[in-house]
Length: 275
Image (cartoon, rainbow, N blue to C red; front, side, top):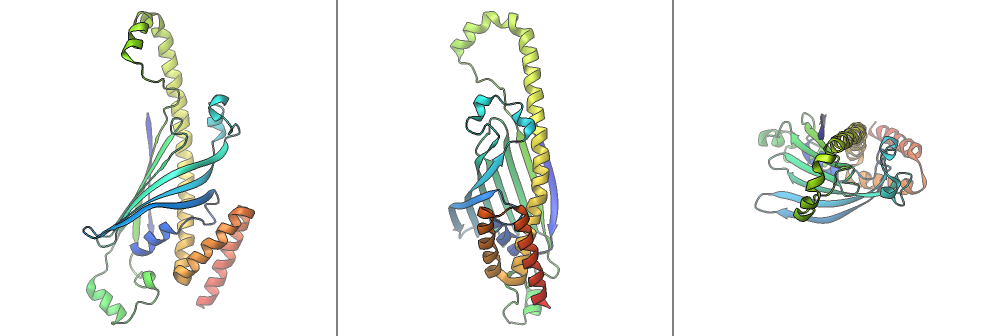
């Protein structure tokens, strides 16, 4: 059985700013579990005018208590308490000319217990016209860079999370093995029925727990994006990168409370600078 969770959101910023914030979103005060991000590949296709990027994120992970109770200790290995680290593979394509960005993120660990694939599509709600750009800039450089034309531009994002648990499914038997067990199929039919029912129930429980976590993660993800967008608005890329540096230092020695205090302090200072 496969479960899905879909959510939509609108950022009051143009697509170039939102796509930049997406690539600068780790670390931030709402993603204290993200330890590192590495770019595996990145290339720009001159024909399609699209930017393709593959990144690998290392995150702290903790299996929910509900799931831990269902798993044999032998499967957990060194992560008997459910604590550990896991990799997430992220692929993205940006087309600023057509006004969209598509991303896909999937977990690389515990896929047998629960496979999670998150797909997002960002679209520009109102593309700027050439006449409007000339009118607002009057031939001069755009003040605020990527955010300079954000007066009436929004970016919508639709997120779809697919969750699939294969926990408890036996490996497929080879032809010879199937012949050997063929004679015992009738005797074990009743037992197999209850075993399948139990396995399906476990999978549904794991997937339901995953949906709850995905829903909560999306809320934090939006808050983290808003942090980065606010930094870009008040100080451009320089302030966003400086914020990333501070956040990286805090993720080593601070806690979630420290992160949010520093973010609020920086936000207040930025607002004061704007007068």
